Image 1 (cartoon, rainbow, N blue to C red):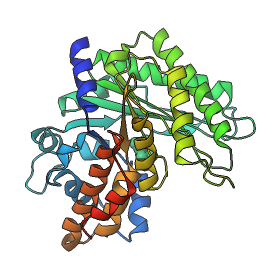
Image 2: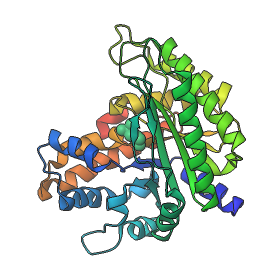
Image 3: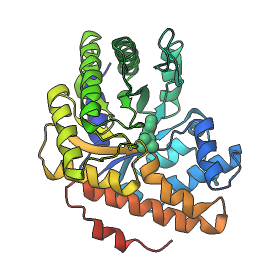
Image 4: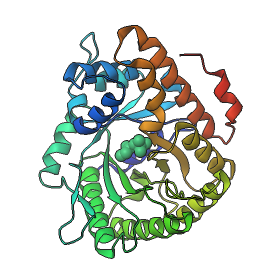
Length: 342
Ligand code: 13P
């Protein structure tokens, strides 16, 4: 294992002003996104959509890495250039989702454990050969009266650390993604408590399983009120609660924290990141690894039509630019008006 290479890659991913595009929707998830815009989820449509994102001119100013799905890392641009090669040529680091999804956790009604450890060593070797320099594994936790249970918190932490160790052995930066889901009517206080328990377990396991934290990144949820809560916490409250959680549980050795958007509106996700960076400097870079919050306007503009590709690229470029501004704490909602109309 080359520790300094891992650390250099992790630092490049969270370079100032840059963040990650999560374009690693599984075949099932991308179908849901396509259903909403009336596009059939064929292999060619999925390729064309990713092609549109990856060929957006100039976006490399704001995007340092892209997370791909197994199908996508094997696909290529219209001219035949493999996607990892295309991204590399723009200075964007290719990454890969390697978990096999959150599956029902035995004897724990309503809770999940993420699968995919069997055969992972061989898959990582193959993905590295295909150009991947970082990977992602997502665990999910729901907030309920008696959840997340200690059982769910610890089995997922254990699996996240086993995944991270295999990544580091393969010379691949591990993005560790424990996502406390924000569905429900819970308060921001409940969200803070659950996220604290989850992060405490994750960093205990990462330590016990000998992970080099300098060569890793954390991809957490922000601490929000439940989406159905009657009283929603403000941007400032979200920034304060999320930072409290991170300061208590994430070691300063971790180079960067790349938030997921988790179903927030695209502008909320930007405003929250901005408010946290405005309170900096922090021990870690605070950046983004957004799926929906970077792609929603682009999907809406595209609707599967070749004549809409340019409008979709403008929409994606604009969100990437807004989130880049949020990395410095200099974003303001008025900047949204500068968007080139789709
Ligand atoms: P969202 O930003 O849409 O939550 O997606 C990020 C991601 O990679 C989830 O695993």
